[in-house]
Structure formats: structure tokens, C-alpha cells
Length: 506
Image (cartoon, rainbow, N blue to C red; front, side, top):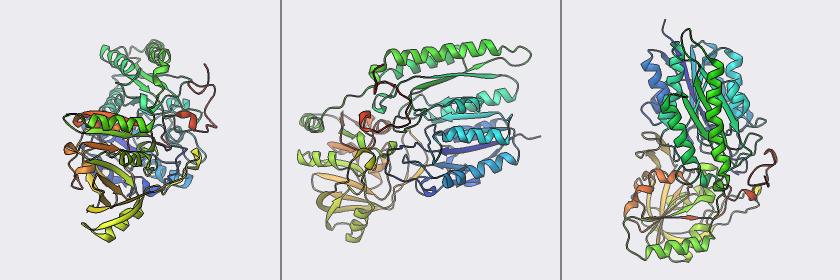
């Protein structure tokens, strides 16, 4: 009889300090979730765990059931009603019967009344199918909970940031589960968490301890000592009891007649403990020390005065929608214009009102705008402050894009209506919807060639490196303001387990 695999994607990175709401329509990056065959069609061939799970099902000759694929840009928690709407298709597919479940989840989702949404998802799976084999792939910024580990059979996560190995991570989880279904492996997991909340600006493998930890994890996988070893640096903008740095390791207790659960668990725990020991020994490297904004922009300006191949990137990392930012804080843009940087491309500013004004004016016409600053951020005591600008409407698009770079390769996305404001010195991409600029298409789709600009300002943190680092002559990180600030002391944590480094002396 043909096996039946249920494959689902429910993803949200919840910034509990964000002012941005998360309705059901936000999933699908503004167009709502994909269901059934539409989910399969949207993700087939993409660089995602969901696509890897589809390929595993095809390889194993199993029927793939795809009840839902729903992913939203990071924002504040969703309502219980929305969460139930996301879970209902998955629960119905499980009740209809299946041989295994493959879940593409985030790991830092918070919903109304629940600090551990992924734990709740897995508890629901177990409630419906107590003995079902379940493989889960998580984002690098997961806040791991005991319930997640207790209710999954196999867990893997990304080993890159920017996340360019999403398909690879899904393939690893899916292959381990498929082997266990064939009786060729028996996965056993060990995990641990540290009293350490780390700055996302220090998560990239090339920036701090993570590189060495991930190198060790890969070595352990290649040696065969363990099946999968995953570092999860956590998501510090979710105020939960589970927030922090963790690791989870899968080892093989053996297939067939020879089974050694105790030995496999010991091997997994040893590798897990070593990964976390490196993180703790080098915990000071997970703290980000920003430069004052005025000095950062001045440094970029000085770099621009010399000869260089490629643009100089200015990274506005405190207002990144990819971590829940409003994407309309204008401090860095204001400083760039104040210091008279020239030949600048900026993307994107989220301001539906300004887009409407530019659309009404039309391409080629002049406008005066109060740009950005439409969003207050009470969680950090920051009021929105627009920037008065005059310029010409250079271009207008429908904002429909397809990623061609190494991240989310092949997927479609939606910026909403998009307009370009040309101030003379700067060309500013203004969108109706928020979107992180990790792909050159953010500029190219509206007629700006980023490789030809002297300066590029991006509202991003690390993901910009996927598309923009290869073209950059220099990179300057700019500390503006917003709910993705790398200064963790600005947040009023209420649920975070204390004491925790670096907020407390440990």
C-alpha cells in the first residue's frame, strides 16, 4: 500500500515588542496561506524544507498531502483565532490518516495565550496520532522548548545565516525519518539550553562563535557519530521563558536487531554539550557593540571618496522587518541625506500612504512627501517621526517579484504597489508591504541597477548578505532605532528566565 506523508509549513518569527499585527492574510507574505495543490505548486523546486520534504516523498514513492503552507514576515503575535485557522487543515489531514508527518516550522512563534506555538503544534499532532513519526526542520533563530523535543522524532535546523541551506536542512530531517520508516535507523535526540540571550547581529557564522560550533557539528555528522547536530542561537525579540541559545542533536540507536538507545543518547548528549560549551566559553562574542549613527555614516562617506569596485552598503539593522521592524523609521535615511551622500539607493521604506500619493502624481512628476514615520512603537517608547522630502516619481510597479538569489530561490513574493522617489541624491524604494531586502530584485524590478550605485542603504540585519555582499566594496552597520535594536537593554522583558547573560551578571 502506498504510504501517505503529510507535509505542512506554518512559520512565524514573533517579535513580541513589534507594533506590526499578524492577521491570517499576513501568511503568504500578504496574500494569505496556500492550501492543498496550491501549496505544492508554490514551493516545488524552491530552496525550502517544504520542497525537500516533497522530494523525499517522491523518492520514497509516498503520496504527499500538503494541507497548508503559511509563512509571514516577522511581526507581533497572532490571535488564537488565526492560529486555529492555520492548524485546522493540518489536523484534518492527520485525522484522515498518514504514515509520517514532515513539518517546516520556524521555532520562535508566539500566539495569543501561548509562548510556545511550535510546541503546541507538535502536541496537537501527538494528540491526534500518538505514535506518528514526525520530522521537523526549524529556523536558525529557534527558541527551543522541552515540549518541542518531547513530541518530535527528528529535529534539524539551518546551519547558515543568511539561510541559504533551508532545502539541505529539510532533506537531512526528511532522510533520517525516511530511513527510520524503512527500519534502517532509530533516531534518538538530546538537547540543552544556555542562560544566554545573544544578539542577532552576532549570529552569522563568520561573526562570532557560531562558525566554530557549526564546523564541529558538521564534522560530527560527517564522522557518523551523530545523524544531525543543530545549533539554535535563538530569537531575542520574543519575550518567552524559552528564549535563548540552545542545541539539539540526533543520533542513531541502530536499525534491525541491534539497538543501543542508551549509547546513542550518550553520543548525542556529548556532542550537544560540546556545542553549548563553546557558545558559553565565548559568550562575550555574542554581544554586539554598535557605533554611533553619525560616525557610521561619516565612515561610509569617507569610504565613498576613494576608488572602489562595487557599492558601499549602509545597513539599517534596528528597523528590519525580517525581525519584526516597522520598516519606516527614518533616522538612518535622514543622516545619509544630512551628510550629503550622493548616488544612493535605499530599500525599502514601508509607507502605503506615500505610495498612494506617488501613484496619484504619476511617473515623472514631482511630489512633496512626509515619508515613513507612520508607526509608533510603545514597547520601546519610540514615536513615529516622518521625514519631509521632495522629489520626482521615477517608477511605479505592482511589486510582484521572484527571488533569483541564493535565499528562497524561485519563490514569488509581494511588495504591494511600489514606487521610487528620486530626491536627486537618493533613489528610495517605497512599498505598501514590508519586505526584507535580501535579493537584488528589490531594486532591479523597479529599474534600479544596484551594482552601479555608489551607496546602498538596506533595512536589514544579516540576510542582505545573501544577495548584496557579493557586490559590496564595503559594509557599514548603522544603528538607527526600532524594535530590532541590537541593544537588548531597550526591551522590557517580563517572561525571560533570569538571570541570563548579558542582561545579568553571571
